[in-house]
Image (cartoon, rainbow, N blue to C red; front, side):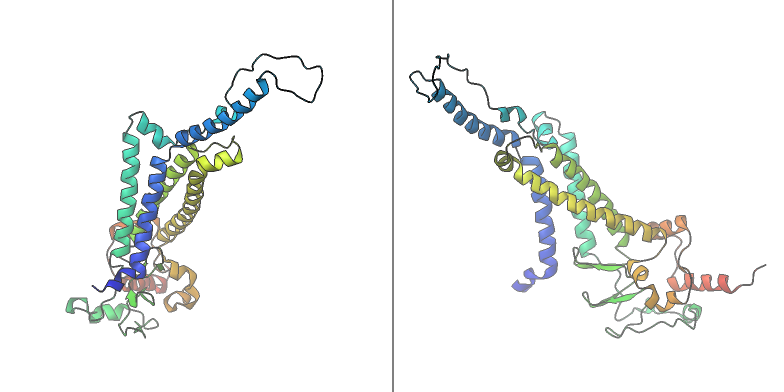
Length: 322
């Protein structure tokens, strides 16, 4: 492999995702706000105590008159120490020896990362440029395709595209049941990896929401601005980043669950007016109801080509009502 292949977009994106995932996890595990806050508060209290002691020294002259000597003022902790920030929940669990929840969180992070790599690296359902003999369309299968919707040949890779396939310019391949090209995955989402993509979104959202709660548990805002920024600035930045990722993951998961429930894809939903097999029909010809749509998407049941489903829908639509 050439050295410059390590700088390809796919390698950089996957490496960035991995580093960001474990970086945020380390912040949640290792950010000890109690220790840093105590050091800062000790410095703050020491400076304040020096001022109090100077005020209480005998022989100190003040511009006011008729001042009576006062006894030395007891040294008290600064008011900021009463608002010392607490450690994040993960840190508290570690200190208390409760390892079940931290290990569960780590396993969820590892699982989401492995799912990300699986979806990113697997074949999304590429259409073979040189089809195998068993993959060639039989005459009866070709005859079942409506004459108004002929199988089109891709103008880029010159393969005969099955129904619902589309050419991806980034991957330079035709993908079966094309949904979209994900830049964060640096891979297409298609017929083979779309179910894993939805599972990944669900698991990733669980990890993000849990991490969001853990980051929030370590934040305390009743402190002087400079003191708070030095003790909790990194944790607050992590909280903002997790909030953004949680919002994006939530929107993606909800939209894809809706598409799966109606047996459509992102490309078909956005570009239905430009797709020949959709613009001639008032409704989605592949929708078989919620239960059958979910069963076919996650389990591959009932099996069959999209051309067969289209032909069945065409026959049902053209049969006279009794």
